[in-house]
Image (cartoon, rainbow, N blue to C red; front, top):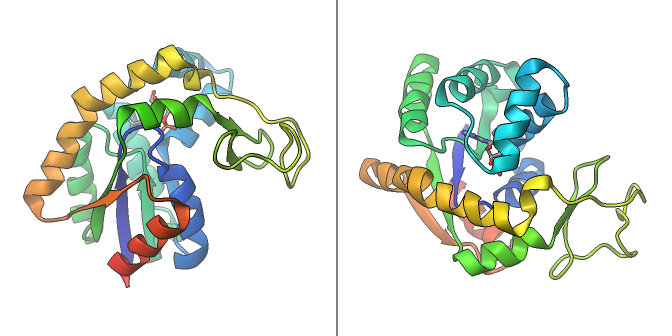
Length: 214
Ligand code: AMP
C-alpha cells in the first residue's frame, strides 16, 4: 500500500507526475482541483460559488474540501493506496487528513514536495494547455502537441485554464507561499517529508518517486 501526498506550487507538475505514476503503481490519482473543476462546471449554486473562488485564484474553504476528500478516501479504489494531488493545501487540511488516515487505520507513506521556483512556475503555467476531452496536459514550450494546438489523441483544440492567466498565476503563487508552504514545514516536522527537484524533467522525477516507494 502506497499513500502519497504531492506538495508544491501550482505548476510544479504534480498532476502530470501523478497521471504517470497511476499507471505504474495502480493506485488512484485524487486531484481536488479536478474535483472542483467538475463541481464548477455543474451549474449548481455551489458550483458557481466555487467557480468564482477558483477564477480569483483563492482557496475553497477547508471544511468543504475536507468533507469531499473524506468521502473520496472511503471508496473501494483507495484500498491499495492513493496519490493526493493539491491536498492538503493548508495546515488545517493537513491536520484533518491526519485524522482521516487514523480513522481508516492508514499511514502516510510520504509527503513529496516538488520544489520549483516562481519564475519557472509562471512560465510553465502560462504555456500550459489542456485537452478538454481527455484531460491530457501539454506545454507549448516543453511538451507541445504534434499538431498545432490539437490533442495528439483526441484531435480536438486544446484550451487554457482560466486560472492559468499570468495575473491569476501570480496570485495563486502568493496564496501558495502564504497558506501551503507551511504544510511543507508541517510534514517536515513529522519525518514524512521528501523533497525532490521539480525542474529535472518528467522521467527523472518519476524515477526518483519510484525509488522512494519501492
Ligand atoms: P489545482 O488544479 O490543484 O491548481 O486547483 C485549482 C483550484 O481549485 C485552486 O486554485 C483552488 O481554488 C481550488 N482547490 C483545489 N484544491 C484545493 C484545496 N485542497 N483547498 C482549497 N482549494 C483548493
